[in-house]
Length: 175
Image 1 (cartoon, rainbow, N blue to C red):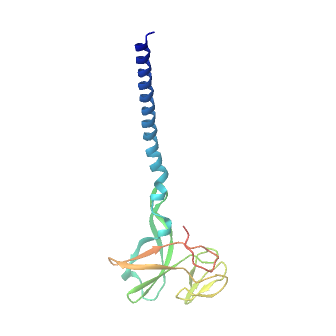
Image 2 (cartoon, rainbow, N blue to C red):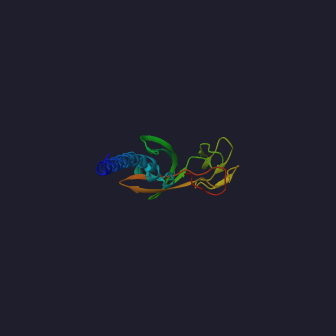
Image 3 (tube, helix red, strand yellow):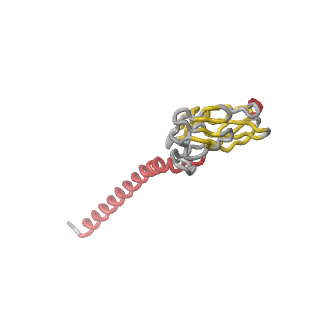
């Protein structure tokens, strides 16, 4: 074989080798881009620690000073899925003039459902009792009922729904 033909073949092999490597790199990038988007999706999603403002009932439908239990229904965002109209929990709403107080219906002791009891609230499972403002008055609950922020917009009461850890004296948000 002559030197010219041998050099020409090596040049073709090198070019073919570079073409195969470039094609492989392009294919790898084409696969990696969607995979990275898929992996990063939960980090970009709204964190559960943010709370969520949920529209509940009309402000004028709340009787003055009388606790009313309302369901907290909203879209549930999870890493890659959205489930509409999921019941996330409940809250006690109490209207005082032009403002609304909201308390979680979950007992800070072990997570039982807190009900209206006399002039305040009570946990029927473990006998924790709370006054009408949610302050602990007796029983094993380590803290007061968990307050939730509210605001009135467009005639409706919105609640910033959050969950808190149970069985600890400090109010620590879950998630």
